[in-house]
Length: 152
Image 1 (cartoon, rainbow, N blue to C red):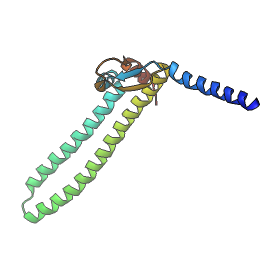
Image 2: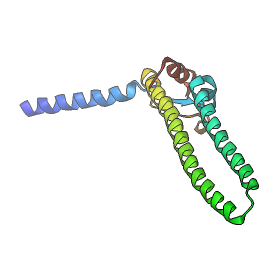
Image 3: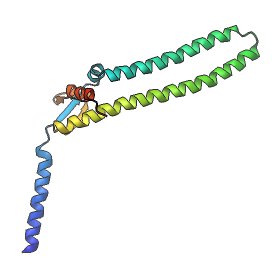
Image 4: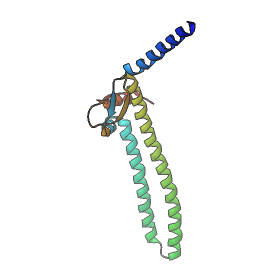
């Protein structure tokens, strides 16, 4: 008799927990990443920083090309080109690392803001708008609002 009561209590608790998890879900949300990029100035600033670093890299190459034209002997040119190749490789690696860090920072902010919206709106998932054909709830504005509040 005691074990039967325990079994019934366990089944009721398990049933309540499983029902509780599904009852509160509201569906699928989606975000329009282009809208988020346009609506959140910190993302635009980060993208400008990346572009400036890329332009600086291109400018470096142009300057080195001009210097190369002033050299007269083939040995000087070869040594100069080897030196420039090493320097460019180093600068390019630094640029790529910087770009990757900025993009990861942006991604993390969007993901964290999306998680908060997911919990607040009681959604099952939030996906990119490009994978939604019909239905879903657009939560782009909510994510932008979270980003502007300073989600980490």
